[in-house]
Image 1 (cartoon, rainbow, N blue to C red):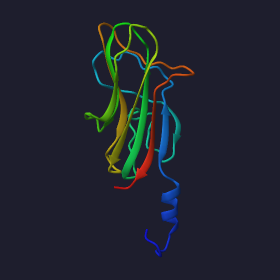
Image 2 (image 1 turned 120 degrees about the horizontal axis):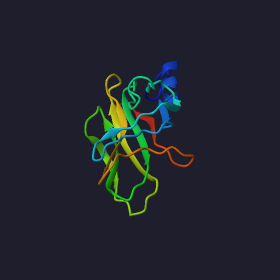
Image 3 (image 1 turned 135 degrees about the vertical axis):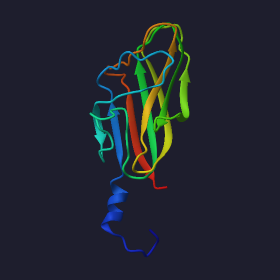
Image 4 (image 1 turned 120 degrees about the vertical axis):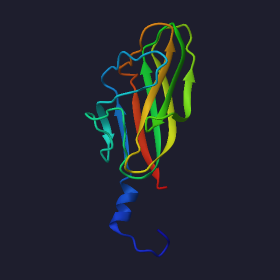
Length: 164
């Protein structure tokens, strides 16, 4: 809108009611295979201003119905083990390769809860595009499980930034 243009309620509504959301993992996700990219599932919505997430259908995905750029953040919390080789978290769009920047850590030999954050700026077309937070952890034996505690839990957050 330029100086002198008429402002309509729809303009004000769009400026004020920017889509945003925060998903929190409240159910442990178990059986995550080593060295396999796995999207985290969320059944709890702290905030979902425009109903972009569905806890029953594709609970790992956020599918914006408002086209534009989004600031997306996530954090993956999972059980520590002494045999991890490398651990990665990243935002993935449309089930394809992760969007940089991801985050990779190589844990020490201590067995403790690990939390790996990630963030990306993502463009969504407002119809079919979706994003999710993923984990790929490599360890010498066994499977991986996420952790739920008062301090550590996996999350996925987004805020609308601007149109295309």
